[in-house]
Length: 113
Image 1 (cartoon, one colour):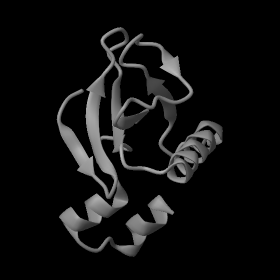
Image 2 (cartoon, rainbow, N blue to C red):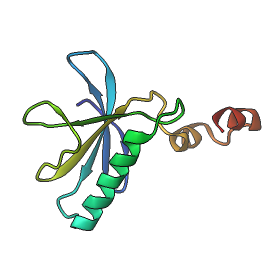
Image 3 (cartoon, rainbow, N blue to C red):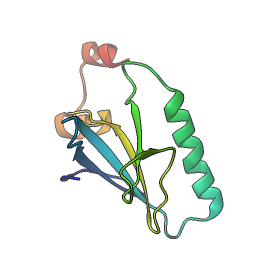
């Protein structure tokens, strides 16, 4: 895991590097130590949805990685964190771009839509 590239209400997003393939990834690390089972179930549903989504404009779900075995698993619950491995998108979210550059012109909005 490399530097933090984003933060959310439940955790952080790190830039990561797969040492076997050289692929850059995003590692969404969510602190779950205080989550109730219902919240963990909602996270698992989110992962299941990410697995099914396939579109060029949607960040690709890659998997989760076990810190113990290094194998891709359906989900990883350590004692404190859930780590979700996603495709790395260089410019981040649209929200972060708007915060950096201000309102988008209509022509650019049309491209994103």
